[in-house]
Image 1 (cartoon, rainbow, N blue to C red):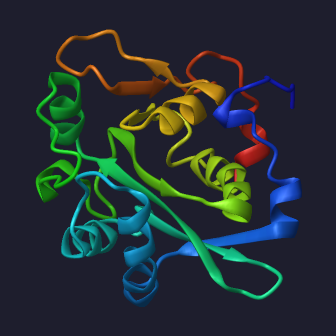
Image 2 (cartoon, helix red, strand yellow):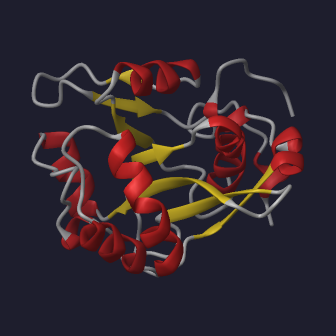
Length: 195
């Protein structure tokens, strides 16, 4: 595979696998790490109940990050697999990011129209998990779906821009960023992730 600098789809997971592992979050893991996330995000965010509803809605929405040295839970990567209605709401500026309607989130087995990066809590070593998430999202079910995220903090905006997200130039969505997938741009060797 060619190397594309600063592209989410081309992040190399090899080093990350030595440091951290990811797994679909359990209700217990989500509840255990939620207070740390709430303290870190000193802004309006979803309640634990909303997070749990999103976790249960689609099995790939919320991922736990564990330190391989001691198996401690060190971070969380939360997404919302958007239904067609959710994607339309995102484009129109009516998507409620802190409290998404469940009709805007695809259920496991339903068609997914886009992926919304809902929240990333990755302090310290946990940041190494981002290439593992990228690898997961390069599987056949997701590799052609654009990624979106709100740059609600300056740090969040910098991180998204550093891996190829670009601001959506629409006054209805002033904080929205989008990542167009390499496969859609004809730049990605999908055979690497064909399993």
